[in-house]
Image (cartoon, rainbow, N blue to C red):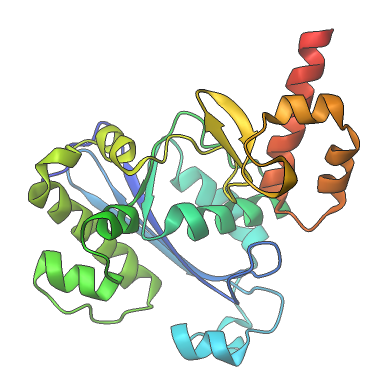
Length: 256
């Protein structure tokens, strides 16, 4: 094993009804957890999304309404998933843009807080795209010398992602071989909300979209408090709204 782990690194892969984080739902989740000693633990579940799975999505991942009709809802398994991820850093392929935000939304809908404060998020796609510009199947062939059998099966994709990362740290010594060094290399330290409506610049949360892009969130909320109400009523992910409220509450506490 080339990657040096201080704590478990859990690779997440989701299959979903679609790609809209605010609307779509998980139909399959696979977590491949790599322990610091190299031991691999796997958790995989089919999930009833409680909504029809579009044919276009089924054509990609092969999961149909019939296959999940007797499966548990995400709410039924949310606590089990959360416990499996406790004290883990999180890895995946395009996970910082999709899998983690989608999982956070499902957790919040289930009434659970998905707090990743202090944990590292390693997006293997980011390393790959910075170095080679390929897909997961091509990455697996390129780094591991094998064809990815069962692509779009959540467990196969998550396992392949782990193998790709382990090969990457061997191929690119400049990215380091720790989770911290990899995250620093890919520039993912500035994350505030998973949808990236806010980012950190020199440690300060700023808007990353719209007319206030680049401005500190605190300054905008002070000068234009109605902007908070507009966002809370708008079609933004629940995690974005949660972080916006945290920033506002922190500002109010400083005034008190």
